[in-house]
Amino acid sequence: MTFKEGETITIHCTDKDTDATATIMDIKEDFLRVLVDGTIAMNLTRKDASSDIFVGNMHGLEFTTIIK
Image (tube, rainbow, N blue to C red; front, side, top):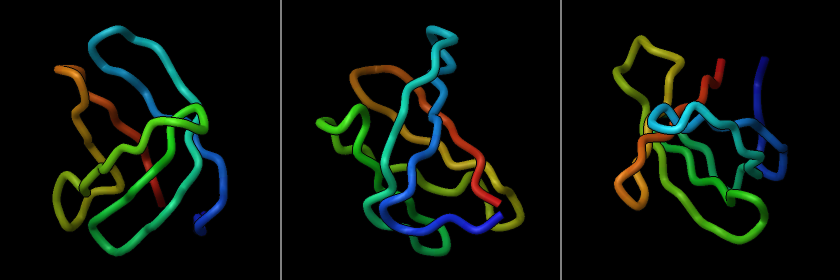
């Protein structure tokens, strides 16, 4: 599945085991910028070149999502 700017995805907070809705603002090979709940910008980076997992941190919490 390919994602594009403007699409909605789910990000997961690994610390609190909760999910949030995010809109893709920018996506590049190893970089993902999303807008969480329509108000909070967050940057996530690919864990490693062969992985589909993107990881980001905000306010001391870790967030992940999978982009294939």
